[in-house]
Length: 109
Image (cartoon, rainbow, N blue to C red; front, top):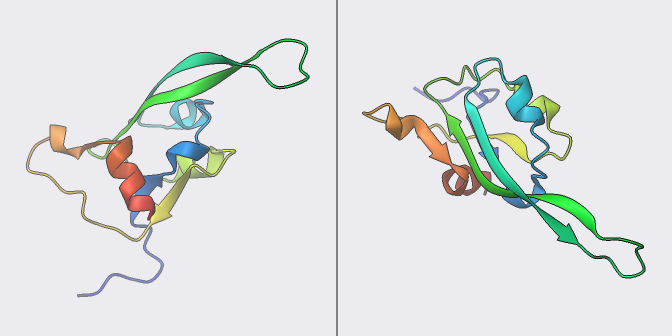
């Protein structure tokens, strides 16, 4: 049995594109996305004062809760989330269905 060409696959993350805006977390209907971040001050040459930016610390998706609706992908203003043609995210335990940013980023490639 082959996978249909229009199948979504799995949700992948491009960590360097994520600005920790929390749009995906807020709009997820099942609340399967967890995001942790901290703020840092960045000084740009010629700026009057330093700018505060959020830095991503941890990003997790619980595929046991995810219903593959794709809302997180649609609302991401920086295209940090996308469908990728991988289907190997099964597990024998509930904890094994929670994937961190390292695993999600590996699917991006």
